[in-house]
Length: 231
Image (cartoon, rainbow, N blue to C red; front, side, top):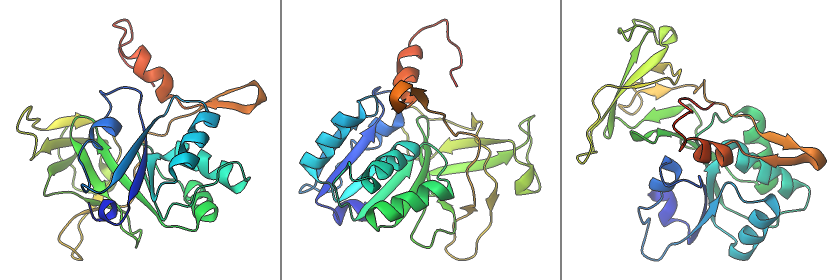
């Protein structure tokens, strides 16, 4: 909310499917005076560039690897925008991706962690210590493969998530396969996740270096009953 109010125009790169959290998390209006542009992640890079250059966002949000790819285009002079803030989500934010985004736009990058089922579960501030767990919105428990509590964060193999704000469809101890060691912190009263692992997506790369983000296929294949799990 603080980021949105400091930005007059926000561009959000979202999943083509309304079932994905990247769509739902952005339907909340940041501020009545804020203009929000939605760009589908399955668009060709050329069309994304055209839309972004037409809008010139102050805040750019989207899938981590896709935002990093846009940053690469910017460093090569193929994308002319100057956001003053960048937020990534849905994939781990690697050091290389963070660095290329910083070099492209000379801005800080803040990572978000969430899921379609639970919503935003963690957020990163400008100190980049990790992701602060949004414990006023959800309860996160670390468990092993048998869904039993663990004594050490490094032993966690799964998470149990309980939403504290979803009154329409309550989820209690919902199983997530994210590998997230969560540590206690006395700094702010919230626990801290140092690193999110286990959800890095690989792009489809075609001749002439044409790249397609996997979300372009996942939202279509996910509607077919013959596919039970798409990775």
